[in-house]
Image (cartoon, rainbow, N blue to C red):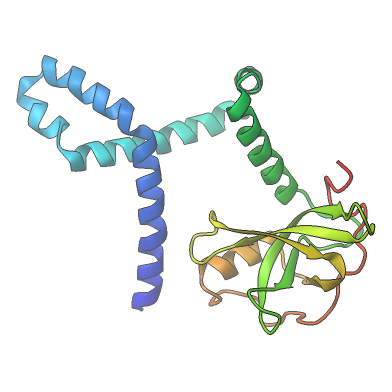
Length: 213
């Protein structure tokens, strides 16, 4: 009973801190402006708890309306303009472009029946962990096919490891992305009853989006 609550609290606390930090500067500025106009509310507006909650709510509401905006023609045009601006900033361009490509690749369905979710030997040959294949690389000297595999951590899948694994050492699963994420976030408690543990994926050349980019 306590473990699900604890894990949920950990995930929510991480998201709360992340969103509060993002909206903090705006709420602090707004609180200072409102405090000068309404002195009676200054103690409430400058309270750290109020500012943290306010920052969190502002970011959540902003994301909600941004999602609604992107579904409209005008919203999509604004997003295109925003991305064009980011493309002109050297460091931001690299980070944003890489993250966007990663999310796009993970959302696409693999072709020819190849699964995105695999198992790899990690952290030792006697153990396996769930990984997400993002692309296929080629060894410049031998021509050997290598997979770039992102290994999310529990219970926060936004952090993890990037492993380069020979394709023949991957183990293909029949899991979907949702099943893999549920497995990681729940610490293995939520998962299909069956999993293929020792079936090699084989040569995935050309079967992963972005493999030949």
